[in-house]
Structures are given as C-alpha cells and as structure tokens.
Image (tube, rainbow, N blue to C red):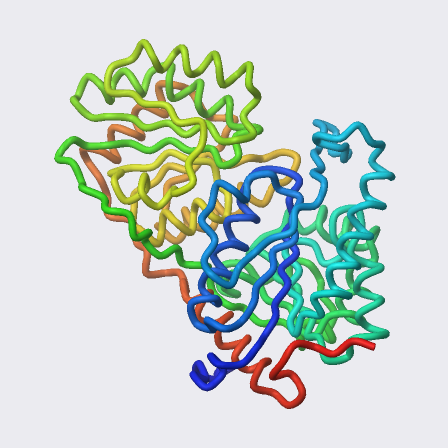
Length: 407
C-alpha cells in the first residue's frame, strides 16, 4: 500500500499521542517507544507525546522536547511467569487496580488524538481493557493503534495466549489499525497467528525500526573491539559467563578489547561476581548499563548478543557482524527471529543448548579476524518513516487535526 508523504503543514498543529509501553522486563519495549516518539517529535515539533510506562529506566534515556512520560507502579515476573509488584509492598491485584485507574485518568485528561499501544493490545494482565472500552464509548475521534514487534512468540503459544485474553475480539472491536514492526517476507503474522480477515484488513507492515546514530562524538580506535550485550540482563548470565570463561582472554591476547554491558535487570549478586571477574582481565571493560547503546555499537567491530528486537535492529542499522545467542524460554520469539535472520545472512545464530566457551571463542575470532560481510540488504528498515507517514495521514484526516474531544 502506498502511503502519503509527510505533510509539512501539520507541523504547526496541536496533536497529542499517548504511547502505552509494555514494561515488566528489560528495556527493549521502552527503547522502541522512545525511538518512535523521538522520531515523531522531530517531524511534528508542536505535537505532544506522552509515554505511559511502569519501567523505572526512563531516566536513562534523553527525551526530546515534546516528549514526556508518566510512571506507573512497576511490575515484575517470577520464573513461573506470574506478575508481582516490583517495588511496592502491594498485592498484584491492588497494584493492577492502581495502574488501571492511572491509565484511564490519563486518557480522560490528556485526550490523545492517537493512542498507540505497544506489545500487548489488552495491556499487562488486561489492564488496558477498561480504557479501551471507555475510548470506544466516549472518544470516537481517537485513533487507537496496536503496535507489535515482528514476532511475538511461537504460533502455538501466541494463539493460545491471545485466545485466553480475548485478544482477537479486542483487536476487532477496539482498534483502528495494527502495525507490525517488521516485514511480511520475514514473518507473516497473519498466517502464523491465524488472524481474522477483519484484523488483517487493519494490518500494516511498517518495516523494522532503524536506529539512527546518536549525536555524541565517537572516535573509532584502531584497536579492534567486541561488544557483549544481553539486553535488560535478567536472563543473560549464561552468555556473559561463557564469554568471560575464554573469549575475553583470547580477545585480550590479540590486543583487542571487550566491552560488556550487564543490563539494568541483571541480578545484583551476579553483577558483583561478573564485575570482579572483569576487573582481573586486561582490555576488558564492564558497564552495568548504558543510556546510549549507539555509541558502543558504533565503536565495535563485532557484537555478541541475545536476540532482542531492538538490539538486532541496531546491529543491522550499524552494519555490524554479530553472533546471536537467543533466549528460548519462557518465550521463543528470539530464537525464531535469530533463525530467520541467520537464513537471510544478516547475523550468525548459536542455539543456547550448543553454547560452550570454546565454540563462542571460535565464532568471536572469526568475526574479528576472518569476517564474512553480513548481508544487511534483506530487511526493510523504514519503520520510522512508515510510522511517520501513518501519523501524517491520521492527523490530516477530517476531524482529527487537533486533540480528540471526548464526551
């Protein structure tokens, strides 16, 4: 489908977008939300963009003029997949009741012209449903959009979970559009997740979310460099331990350096152990987290990572050779993505059940000293431009040039 180009006349209008950011683990969804809001704020400098999230990590990122956020009480997941309060001494039912009330009150006050809900259309523990129903009854001019990454989980798991949460009916009744941050040629969500014709009619593949380089000055050293990152870090211990067991030593012996990012959700006891190990190694550096992965990615010659959506988009955006060791539990989406991208020649994948320090070292040495140029031409990376065009189209349509009027 051909999309309209940006309408520069819209830059002077008052528009409001609210972005609900799934937030229970890691920083991936938050980083994607910040990237989308930042891009739109640059294109529409008089518009207002409000992130609503329980993530405690928003202060790690620089928000541009026009973008602000509301912090919900944070949730976390236990190993069995059950949600709990992350910081407050509240039962999860109490916490969810508080979050639902805050989300609804924000919509009623902010009255967004576009409401973009990320990752899960019904929200964490279906907390978004009351707000969606209220918008249906009271805000007919608010455009409601579901934005999903290219792969949610295995088809069997996703279909079962969405059926249990009544997601197909909510998508049908409460949403105007569905955006897939990916490409149909890589993963056909309609076919894989058995979406209905009515949902398919609302669906738009945007392409992947390209990550623009930051404006920080970066001087590329002649010393080769490996970046090791495991996203939020909650389940990255095995990859970090495997790298430190052998590859870090071999990289240092060749005169290259390793930069290891543990992630803000890496358990503190594990972080202390790994910091101590890194302190004994030459040419090896540890960061608990970073507010600008772009800086580290641009300086690296090779990347070792898990298979999160945002990190892999950055790898392709900056054209870096990468070894991906995906998560396979409790969700299988990283493994599916890594396998598909490996088949396209964009990255090399290693299943975690085959991970050993020796195999990891061999792959890292190949990337540093016998690299095969990855084929990064296979992906449509125009997601942000497509999203900008969709917003331009929405905001130029009749009755939606200003903030929605709710009754």
